[in-house]
Image (cartoon, rainbow, N blue to C red; front, side, top):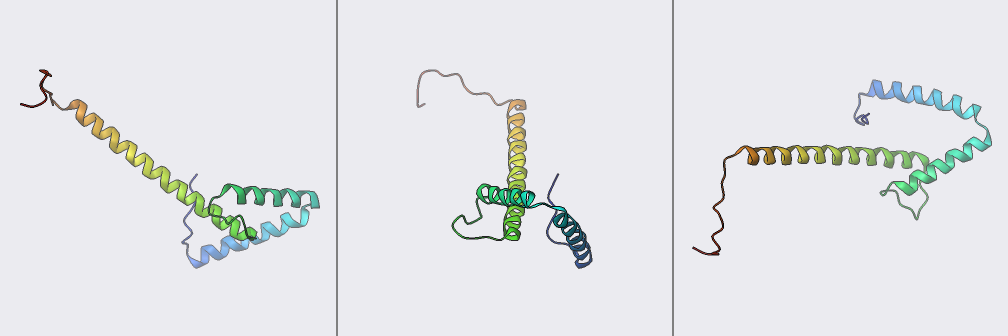
Length: 112
């Protein structure tokens, strides 16, 4: 599943925020203190795992999520570039294998 682009129309962004806000409110109302500490542990773990998040200063949960989303985008780009490189390498290898390039037999001399 790909992360979606952060560039959206204002209307769809507003609708998404409203939906998330209502959902977040209902979830936060139903949580016990134990579940909230588990969420804090999860944010701490995310802060440890994402390399672009500064470890030596306090970062809000929203900032952590922004860094996580950026990191996912960066990983997707790296994977797409890697896949393209592998595809190009395979194409070059197939072209070399199908070509009729022959190399002279080694007659023991380095220079002619």
